Length: 337
Ligand SMILES: NC(=O)c1ccc[n+]([C@@H]2O[C@H](COP(=O)([O-])OP(=O)(O)OC[C@H]3O[C@@H](n4cnc5c(N)ncnc54)[C@H](OP(=O)(O)O)[C@@H]3O)[C@@H](O)[C@H]2O)c1
Image (cartoon, rainbow, N blue to C red; front, top):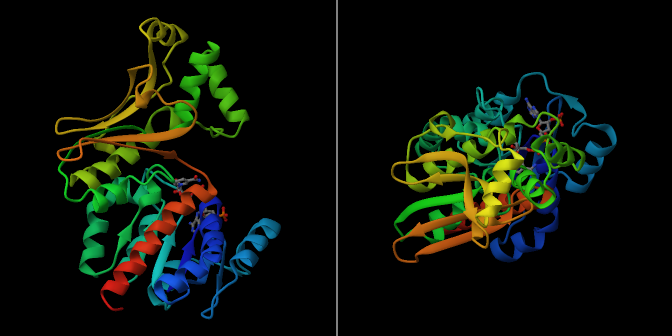
């Protein structure tokens, strides 16, 4: 299989390394190699139909700041459409205003008969139905396990292993940064601003933290889950959203007096699509600490199914992309391609 990686930051470099590390698995399980035949970042591009060395790509990005030696001159869409490869791995930044540049990359790939694996929430949280239809129309796969919860395998679990279940509802913690802040406020009695500063100093929160603390990131993920698992046709804008900016030390202390903690919970059920801070009893799975993500599904046969995992990180997110890559290889083999 020939892949092109769009965006060569944390996740793009992680998946390049993992593809390099798993060649034996690809050969043993599928009798073929996975070759990276192209990669591009915001300003440069590199291509080689015979395959590029992932270690060399990562080394060049680290030492020069660019993945390629050739400048990108706005021709990326045409390149995706015309270049001979099988699967686009799309890892450019999430943009919740217009889903670009990911939307154009993904549509160009699907429209020219290539599979897409993406970790980019923007296109999925804004234009899910359109992208799914384009994949079906062109008889290719669109997979996006990494877009929700990093290494926590909730989408493929629900759509594949639990596909015989009726899934009634989902509740979960989808943003590790908020969880870290709420936990520090509780454990140390810190005011919100101080816990946020600490998270920023530790590299857990961005310099502009609004995407996390105002619940935007969680709402994007909830919209993706509602579409992917519950068959809804919603966007990020349909999610009722309250962040954690206004949570006070008093609110945390009051919850503590009732033996509860405050968590930013995303919930999907037949009447609700909402991200908001809620009180959770101590000891409940959703009272989880640290930066972990967690999702609880309520199903008709299996009952409650809970998944916990690391919601972000270079290798963790690459792990989710790898699972999608293996699923595409399996599907191709089943179809005798
Ligand atoms: N990091 C995680 O743990 C994680 C987990 C789950 C999902 N995600 C999602 O995965 C995606 C990638 O995250 P990341 O952490 O890898 O981001 P990142 O480190 O900021 O990397 C983004 C990459 O995209 C490139 N890029 C930006 N604009 C571009 C354009 N117009 N055309 C081509 N490339 C462009 C950047 O180029 P330059 O290098 O030239 O700036 C960079 O290489 C995001 O959508 C994010 O929300 C991330």
